[in-house]
Amino acid sequence: MSTTAPRQHAYTGPPLPVLEEPTYAERVRTLAAQGSTAMLSTVSKKQPGFPFGSLMPYALDIHGRPIFLISNMAMHTHNLRADPRCSLFLTQPSTDGEPLGAARATLVGEALPVPESDAPAARDSYLARHQNSRNWVSFSDFHFFRLNPIDVYYVGGFGVMGWVTAEDYMHAHPDPLMDSAAGILAHMNADHVESMILLAHTHTHIDATQAAMTSVDRLGFTLRLTTAEGMKGARINYPEPARSAAEVRQQLVTMVRTAKTG
Image 1: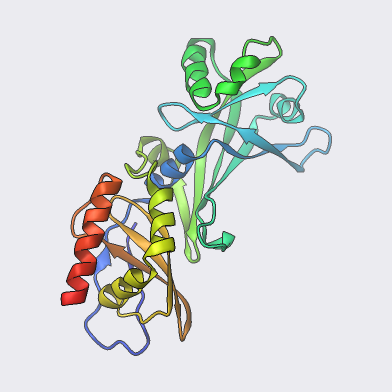
Image 2: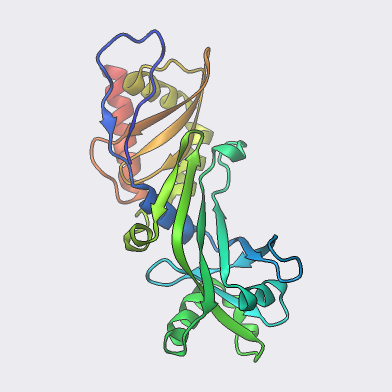
């Protein structure tokens, strides 16, 4: 998905370029791969027609389908055995204290017992993510379930939202910066606010007094900017794609140096 970088009302220059961004499918796959716990909503057996929410540890199979290890005693297990329809709500921790600006996604589908032929792979994937479950994974009343998505809804923050097909989601790949993104955001927001303000002015013509980096990926990053006209968002891309934290640092150093001398 691509968006046009926001501009100040006073900006009268040529239109700013439409920047390449990871697709919504890639973003959801990244969000799902980063997390390990989400909110599972099942259809209540006790109160028919009402959703029932449960905090749910999960892992992913190779297609991005969530796997659950659940007990026969759990209310959500009773619900799923009666009606497999459910949704899993994934969230990204807020990086700047604004929860509605953080990414989130809802996977809608059916959660069914994992077929016996897939059980060893499901077990390996789950235990790799949740090692403490080795203490009860072999109990007779625990079983693996797998959510088979039929549709996905993504919200990337204010004004960024849309549906993703299940096929696109399962064929997408997590962003290569997934494991280092949180560290990059924390470092930039703690130590390089002035540099982000400079980059926002140089690349989007927005004059800001404060800046926070809210996401980072292989193609670029997004900023939340405090301006005289209120809060604004900006997308800025690197000159070249980055596949590691070291490459992001190199790109940012070059961009700031260029902005200062240009």
